[in-house]
Length: 271
Image (cartoon, rainbow, N blue to C red):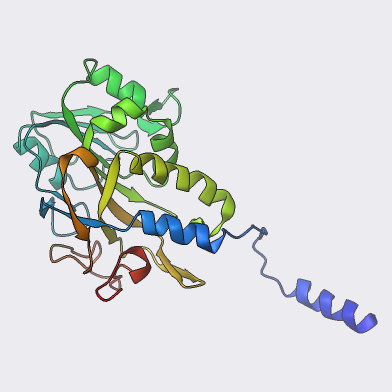
């Protein structure tokens, strides 16, 4: 008994100084099913790149004709994506309380100095209230490009289905994806994904190589990835996307190691 007690004491004395918390692991089969539901598909519309050949550029279906508005919460140091949307005749609504203005200007840019979140108070506003303030008639098709450092889950869960449907194309950078291995986070994040997948299909995934990857069981999850979703009534599915990276994909950060989409996220040739 003394030997056991001494071993336990030695174990706890040598634990890292940082606090740690036990967490229930996500059921591997449930996580595999979510990844399978997110497997990108090929459509009858090819993917094109909007924005720079670096961070801030995204792949979207070549189906932009008739999109009247682009919503882009999360203003970065580049706005090439938004400039190209404006050049195509879209009104571009940008929001971010951490900056005073977008890095570029354009007559079609309409900036709101607020964070997009789960409630409207002080420096926060919900996506719902923002949309109703700038598009009260809620007509036409829209595009959503969102990069808000982890708040995307609460924002998507809070967004009304009728407005979600108006986004013909949705581009979202999802953060802390490695937490999908944690059952508590999985319960919330999977509902956000399922809500999007109710009316849209994933057509592209690109790992942001500014983050690392985490491995558990037979699954490899990059911490940050950019997803493109396409509304189901706009395309004909041509089968699964079987080759990654896409020829138009570009690393977000040239100084960091390349991260290729792990095979558990799509259906490679031969599988």
